[in-house]
Image (tube, rainbow, N blue to C red; front, side):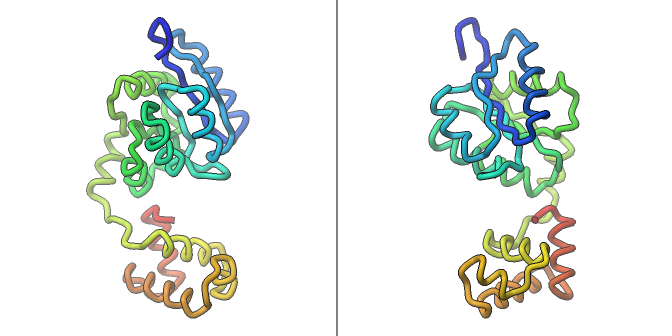
Length: 206
């Protein structure tokens, strides 16, 4: 922390209006100072190494690198910086990924503003700040049985890509892509590819 116990904060959010609102909100708290703000996930680590924040407030969906992946990199390269994830979607699988990445806090964007400042203070002090209902859902919910590559293939299929297009984008053979899709349908106990997309989407795995 800075002199006087002021918490140094990094804010990463790709939406300019929202990022500005977060910076302004935190600027009203005399116990905090925003030392860096970035709009891309792949700018987080460099900014943290330069400005050495106590807490990084990261959006999940950012260009370049998603917030959870950026958090995992921070845990390795700037371990003294604790991470608080902000997301519009409270998916149990996303929370599990965030906890695996070493984050200290996980909050929904629609939480009251005063809760954000309180969460930052608690995270800076080394506490875990997780929405209780979301934590319960993450514990009791079904874990994602798909591998990261299978998720990638299914996400492309959900976007309307056919096996040939998926193969070209991932530098795989069409046969390999078909094998992935077949394995996905089997693992999810789905009727077909569309049903697999539905199951994975509803579970928050895509």
